[in-house]
Every structure is written in C-alpha cells, then in structure tokens.
Image 1 (tube, helix red, strand yellow):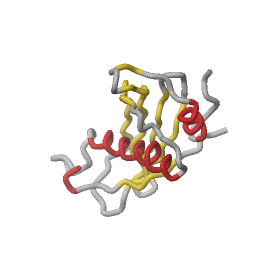
Image 2 (cartoon, helix red, strand yellow):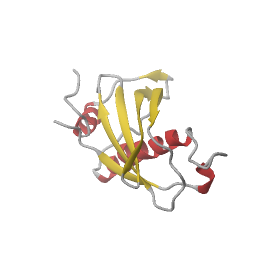
Image 3 (tube, rainbow, N blue to C red):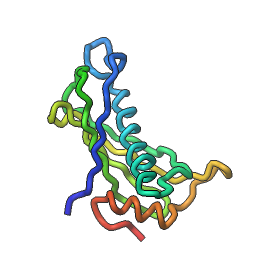
Image 4 (tube, one colour):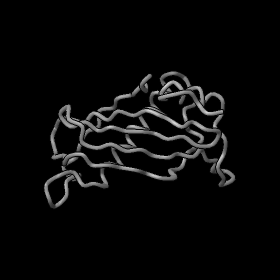
Length: 141
C-alpha cells in the first residue's frame, strides 16, 4: 500500500533564482519546510489536533535534484508524506513537481523536541495517530 500524500501548492519567488537562471538548490529546503508546516500545523489545526506545535527539530536532510526548476507564476506542487514513525523520531518525504514533472525529491529526519528543557521528547499518542494517517506503513512501536 502506498503512502497517503498531502499536496501543497508552493509559490516561487523571483528572488528564489540563482545566477544560472533556475531556482537555487538551497531554496528547495524552504519549499520542503512550507509543505511540512502546511501538513503538521495548518492541516492538523483544521482537524482540531495539536499538530506538532510542541516542537520538532531537523536532524538530517536528504535531497536529490532531478531537473532544474525555472521561475514561473504557477506554483509548484509539493507532495509530502511520513515514514519510520518511532517513539522519538520520524521521516518526512517530499516530491516537488514543476508543471507535472518531477523535479526534486527529498526527506527530512525530524525529532520531537521540548524547548522548555532543551531536550528531545517522545511523540504523544495523538501526534503518532496523526502522523500514521500520512504514513507509508504502520508506525513502529
């Protein structure tokens, strides 16, 4: 069974381009972040969930560029989904489509974090349940 994906339309900015006339490679990490925020905060709030507002930190990024992206007024479609849900970490995956063509893929390892004590924390049952709905498989125990 495939992952349930959440699709976010992400607008490009003229300033996202680099000297070579395409979207700068680093900007794609910002697009990933915009998709994560849309799912974990905006979508979660619509469903009256706490989302992951208690805090997460990025432990690692992985990104592969399939084709250059050139600025367009048409937004990119960023698909986002989750895998590897554990007690205190999970992975968020992305596919970026430019005019229906796959342009960039990547993932982010995220760790729930308690900023009041400056330490990692465990996912709450509610957070795990929300993430599992957007996962490509069952949550790890």
